[in-house]
Length: 266
Image (cartoon, rainbow, N blue to C red; front, side):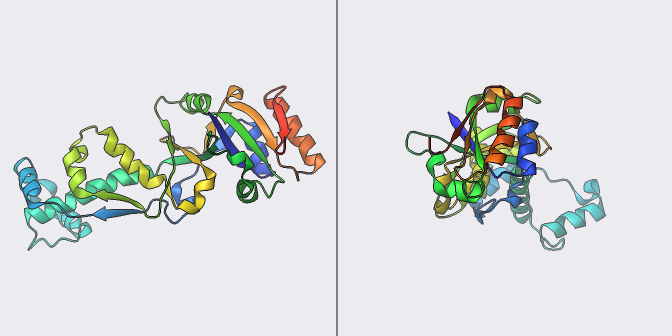
């Protein structure tokens, strides 16, 4: 499958091309209010709480340390003199889910558009307008499978791709489901992990023309390197000046001699 990375013609994009890397960012730098937003159902059935409490042993104030214990309660909005085990358990569940979400919020993400039989973003004027300086920029065309292998060459399974979903409301999570899946107790549940990841791969329908794919990375670096084999071709915006086209072609052929370079109208 082909992936597209639309670029403006500037020093940053040319440097990245020359050095074979894609710049990854955190979701806080993205451009949609849905990014990282989700609806949380905090209700936990009393029966489920009772079952969980039978299997849960809380450390005492003495075991934790008085100062740390009070700080913990304060951070959860609980009062030492009135807190119940049920309230403490509810707060711990929410805190545990927040920790899972924070893992994703701190991941680095690289954004691409994918070509499918139903939609090819290379022919979307809005893509060129928003991300390639109104046809004055260019588009890098990658092979999805090879790109994934390259991103994972430093540390296996550190980078994974996920299709963006377009919907009218943010993703929904519930504390009840979080407990039931066992994730908070260390159980591996990939279905729920994928659901949590959806919090950071959901956008409003107004963006669906992008046909976006995201690479989510545990690596703590903005620069994610790819091989020349991953880069299939470069598509040039029809309004790119000739002198810029010449410079881009020289850099591209230095990176991958003989690479296909064509106008978007071809």
